[in-house]
Length: 399
Image (cartoon, rainbow, N blue to C red; front, side, top):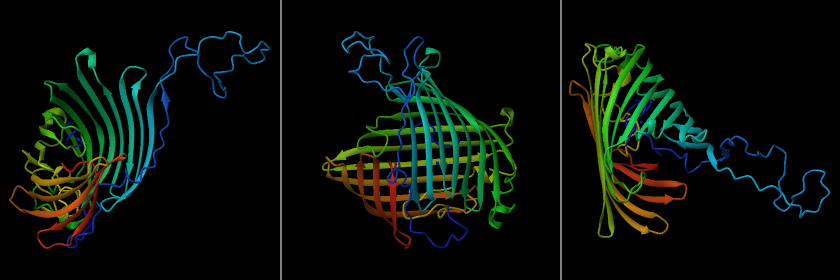
């Protein structure tokens, strides 16, 4: 799927020898220019509608041209229509993506049916995304939520660009107080445009798979969550796992199996809040050529292992096994303002099917601000292999 963690939700240039000072994640929220345009539900049959250009004064009861005094009885005011949609624009900057522009149009109660519809656009030097999301919260009264997507995206990876267009459908069912089960289908047309001789080599398993591909897969999994909030939680637990299988019997050009797992725990320890989290992913193929280049694993964001830029850990041509782990100790400084100090350690690694790969470890400290515009964090990361320290700006949770 376009998001490897649809339930529960993701590069450097040719010269890999120099680590760039990084402000990872995005400044979209910080520099957000938000224009909320209210969209109203359509009036019901026979409901009076105020037409464009009319001005209504609750103290003026006279119709146009009427000469009777204002005390003349009037019809009751029509019921107020509640806003059901939003329009937002945003601009930002990050060292991973340079300048970022975003736009979103969302309708949370489409035609008074309770369905959700959203159109999202995100454009930067490394990523372009156009996505249409539709959700039916209670499909046929069964309690199952159906979510569908249509999308076109272009993502930069080490040595190539991954261009994809397709769609997905996912069914989500609550099976316990904190447990959800989901299953979905993805159908995608993918092109890997190679611009680096290393990635174009055919003697590395999977690198011959930069031709156009059709990927059709089934995915299922479980998510357990007791988090108090989705971003920068202060207590609770998150556990999730999924498996995705692409097969020719579904219409796919390749046969692959991908397994993902992720989790975090957040707990008060005296005056501190301890945060522990991690993730693991593995992908394999039954085809002689191995996993195609476009589907291989990359640590492609600076905030996964802070202190390392996108693609600086692991083989340049990607890997078949990836993991991350991190621990943080947070000390609230001004609880009412949501400001805390934090110390952390990150670790991660990627290996291919032949055992080639590398790991990275960093430690650092920073500040967290759970601000009115969203959770923000400012971290200084120090790679333990002697690399150059990096300043990392982040939006949202690290776990």
